[in-house]
Image (cartoon, rainbow, N blue to C red; front, side, top):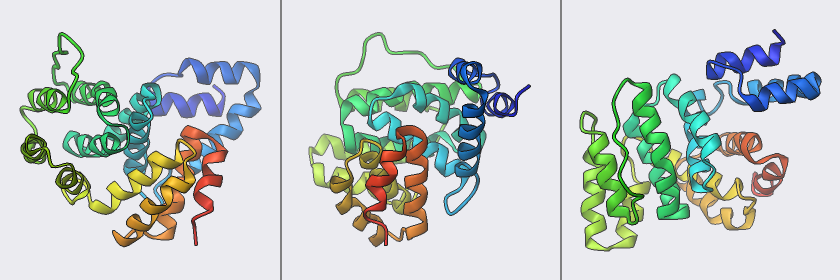
Length: 236
């Protein structure tokens, strides 16, 4: 088996159709793509686990469920817990609102299924943040749900500033990683200028230039080289 095909079979448990087609049309392209992906997704300043879950959350933010689900598997395989995963997806909510968090439900249910837990899908699509939080709480009955319960209490107070502070505060995931996630949300949609305030907030939360660069690298994998242009303008 071609090295590129073997790599993706190990990552996903099978060769995805898009990988097979890339190989069929030009194996050298797949080899080059596999090489850059393998380099970027190694443990670096950010860990492999963190990279996968960050990409999953960034794709929820931009409503791209296909890549979100692929990287959810990677996140779970490399040690992410479901409570951690959910907190990252709350960051996608800060970017894209209810549609982004609703998109993340597919990843959360998949993560639970990967751990052998049964998930009952809602009869109709949830329309509000409260609806979605209650679905997640029901699914996570055997998990640590304290962060979600506290967040739900804040939602009921209708205090958007306090809600943002809660989502971006330390929990199962550090505030630094959540701020890096917000940077990635903007960069993945080529909104470099809009990302600038979040880049500064990420630095204030303790993010290094190397960690910000890692965000740019993983954005390349999900949004292409132009995303690196957008981030590199703000690197020191």
